[in-house]
Amino acid sequence: MKMKIVALLLGFSVLLFIACKKDKFTTEPQLKFKSISPTTAIKGNIINLNVSFTDDEGDIQDTVILVTKRYNSTGGIFTLDTLKVRMDPDGIPVARDGDLNVKFCYGEFVTGALFLNLEAVDREASFGLMIKDKAGHRSNYVESDKVMLKKL
Image (cartoon, rainbow, N blue to C red; front, side, top):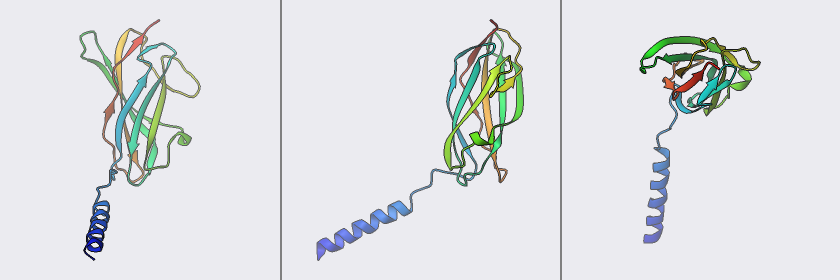
């Protein structure tokens, strides 16, 4: 009889622990930088910015806010551009979590990639991203590692 009570209390404790477990998703979309490639881009290359996201309602939109920071030779910010970019709706997962891959081309038009009109000079740049969901909640801002842009 005593073993049944202990087993019952243990089972109840496990259920209580699982029920009280905090959900890892929030109402505001959350972004996390995963990767950027290539680390050195030549004019005409496609740059891939990959971030993971979570959103409790799973209602992220097809518009992203892309921030481009170009650095001077001393490492200070030379220019800062912010663009509101509409992505292909088929590339936006309808889910509570997943990956977003933003593709853009450096200095030339390439089919299937966003065009960034960056001057063709040897310079480092980084790329930041924010999204909004359908309810208007804005995500956190994430920024890539620096990429070397080459004139070649």
